[in-house]
Image: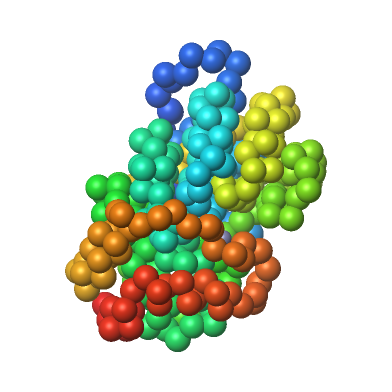
Length: 304
Ligand SMILES: [Zn+2]
């Protein structure tokens, strides 16, 4: 009984919900069924990778988009979400947000939740701890600066690698870790219909889940209107995740983050990181090199 009480208290401390404000002009829209306010104290973990989370009830889904922002595709995805008056969480890559700050701001301005997905999509399981932490903290600090605050203490590991020592570190930083329940496999989809079939097929089996998309693929943008209308037709409800408190950045990263924001304010746009597969253990040397191109070694080795 004591254990059950402890679990109940833990859940109560992790998430509370509220009714969304209805400002939608589309009466038949998918919308948002409820807002789940996440208390990130101690770094709670969500998704299939971390058994025991009770974030979602039967029939509920969370929409998440990784790796952006990226021109055209992110904008088309925002339009599809707006047409259905629904909300998502975007796990931005820091270097992408720095390259496309106006787009990053547009995502936030439309009321979506902004989390982080490292600075350059590095596989943190392959990095020494200091550099892995620099990937995490630099991205959060840059995004917080670019957006003028409001970044959620929500993090997703590239490749869902999630090494234990970094999960522990994120706990000390009161940053929640989000894994995935339903992978859309959009990074390898050859048609929008393949994404629709995959997502709806997985949801038919699971009945609920955190869904992973990537807002850097045209095929994802093309599939999303149909995915959303199918979710509505099948009776699924969208839960909008919001943080109880916004992120607190570390002063040690203010200087490198300032350099990045200044350097990218006049930089030419670049292509997205070249590797987006979420297979466990996949090494991304190219992405790792990106962070060194953008930040000095001294900045990267700074300790919080
Ligand atoms: Zn990713």
